[in-house]
Amino acid sequence: MAKGLIQHITDSLKSYPAKVFLVENNDRFLYRSDVQDAFGAMGIEIDHGTSMEQRITFEMREPDGLLVLLSQDNANYLEDIKNEAVAIEFSLANYVPSYHIPSLIELDLSMLDKLFRNQPLVSLNRKETQEFIEKLKDEATSSEPEYNLAEFIDRLHVLLHEEEINWAVVSRLIAEGISKTIITPQFGALYDQINQANTAFQDALQTSYPQTKNASAVKKPRIVSKILDYLHFNFREKKIALIVVDGMALWQYELLKTRLPGTKHEEVIYSWLPSITQLSRQAIFRGDIPLSDYRQGPTSEEKLWKMYWKEKGCHAFEVAYQHEKIDLSNIDAVTKLAIVFKDLDDKMHGSSDYADLLMLTKNWMDRSKIAQVIEDLLSKGFTVFLTSDHGNIQAKGWRGLQGREKLGANKSGSRSQRHIEYSEKWLFDEFMENNPDLENSVVKEEQALYFKNDLSFSSNELLVTHGGAHLLEVLVPFVEIKNES
Image 1: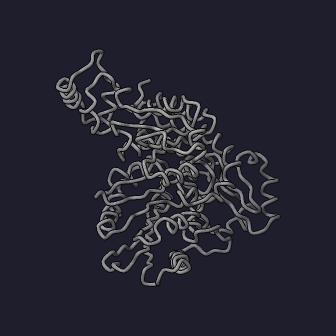
Image 2: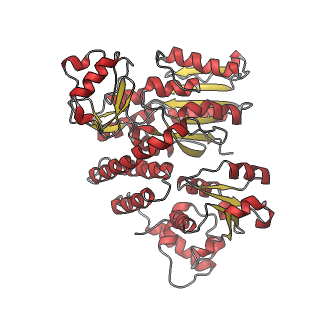
Image 3: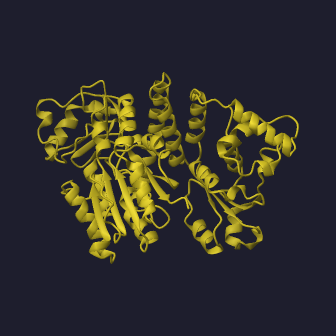
């Protein structure tokens, strides 16, 4: 299986008996922001800040990832860091030894991947290296190569058998796979692999979700309810815009991100469980645990957003909320702006499968003008944060509710066909007693139940919805977008 350069380096680092690396990198390849983002997608954080910044990063590092601390002198670190770390020297020449390295050091990662996969048997000088690069460029075709399903399966297998599964890395791999195979014959086999991964994810949720809900938001939010605390702690004196795209899954963000301006720092966070709008989006705008008696709607969200920032000391004229109809013409005094795009969720609920939703998503990206909105915000000095309240899933129909089962079954008011909340406990108990085959397919919380596999309370063969605990619904993007300058 042909690996890319970043994946090969990642696998090399994972072979060490440590999760922290003190790295001297004289060719400064690891200092590139695009390189750091690429390693971040593989679960490796790279920090080249001050000693104090690196100390904070070390103390707050992710337990399921690797940390690389860049320094010109590895002897500068304190003993407690040295005791947990491996000190190494990194050079791009160790991974592409056949080339003239100064000719490679600023090439984009796609070209470096081609060079890594096509290394000649003899060393090339500068002229020969540059001629080889031009040859590879000429050979490149505009047609998209067929997605390598075998490589996806192998890579997923490796990730799912690590001692600590990094679900951010897994979900990014899955998102890329979905976005590239939806309308191909490979999609069915790929989706089967995703459901197998979800089985492991459900096991992880049982132990990790309670801690995730209470995790610190200083470094990054781990869950939607911590987004506002993260923004307040890190950007309280800056102009920020939080854009929430209702129902946008990670695979849809994969399609969208190539159209967006600015430089992007991408994270994967958890939606609230169950992944219904009135809980998860409420959690975003409340900045806290959602309440069960909340009435979902733009008016409620605006009130929560403004209340949060008022309590943090912001003036009323500094805080604004917009829903669907976006107007950026009079926001010079605004420093905390929230924008909600709702119609992608409407398109999702109207889709019979992911092939439908793929076409509707591409249409939405054009008609919503979201890229232009972000560009305008960046030009006005905002740092933009893009996220979603929940993802979505191509689900199979278990069956629809029948007769007495419908009585009091929609207490939450959710449109989801993967989540039921009964108004009375006896109705919930009666439903579960009459349907024991659901026991291993659902999560039960008080008078609510929701699917953790790919079933739905529907008679349709396939439909696209949300509201359960499947990894495609729960893991969503959280992206910081800055002006490229």
